[in-house]
Image (tube, rainbow, N blue to C red; front, side, top):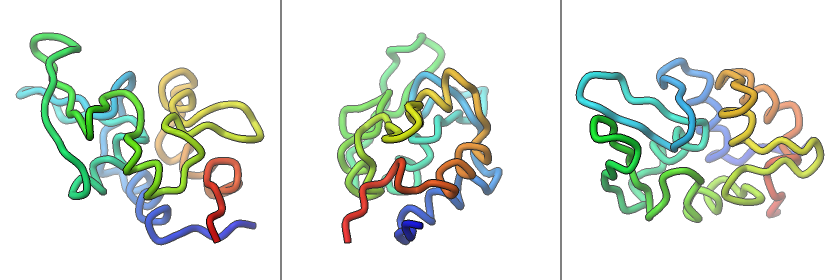
Length: 130
């Protein structure tokens, strides 16, 4: 089985922590009245945000802002793709067909369920750069 890098382990631990509220459609949605919502790749953006440019966009609705990470609001920016050794910016699964975006948004798996899938078969999501 492919070993996890420290960055991959940090991200999966954050997904399993219960410290992030799950959302869909965008990496990270925020409002003044509602707790921030993240997709699974948005959690990675949040924990590795010091390496990226950040800003707010009101593209979703006037009352909802999306955090922009290196010009991206819906898929992982290249910084996160490289940091985690993902195959691409949607977290495509090279064996089973469902990307991380689809697991989060379409199948509505919990963060813990997504982390379990990744831990069971890390080579499906991460390029082994040994």
